[in-house]
Length: 195
Image (cartoon, rainbow, N blue to C red; front, side, top):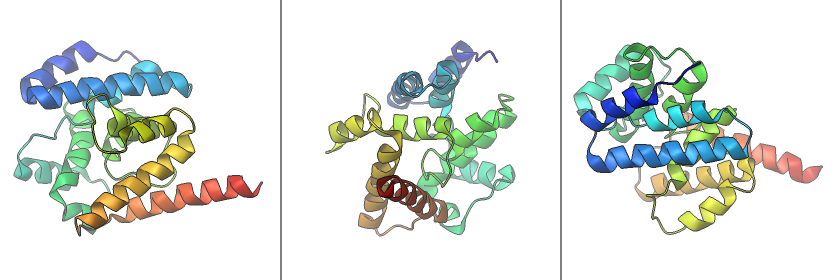
């Protein structure tokens, strides 16, 4: 499949703030590197990373409208957390406005904030690429970058730990799929250690 990134960059540049646009480019570049490292389609990973925040700066009303229109399974905790709407809205938007039919790309955008159990490698790449892109400066970002480039399963478990800690600190709600994602990778790694 041909991924028309020039056209999408033009759209993003016109519809996102300069900072969010740069973040999108950084995530796309990170996703390409991770795809190379883990044997995935680099163009597809770049494309998915580029579009992961396509709806981030739409109004809350518009994001929620897209979420409700999408028909995607969305848990109550996601519906009650405005900061999570852009991922669901973005997945639906790329499907309807850009005609993206690749379910892996759609899901990688849909789950880049909350994660889930049984993520595909592309979903993992976009989730992790967003977490460690060049513009990220949180306290343990260098430690996270080392995880991301050493073992994808360990990186996912560490990323879920990091995400859950941040949600708990804010007294916010944990989506069911996030808890299931954490348990999935914990179980996977515990199983690997027993071998």
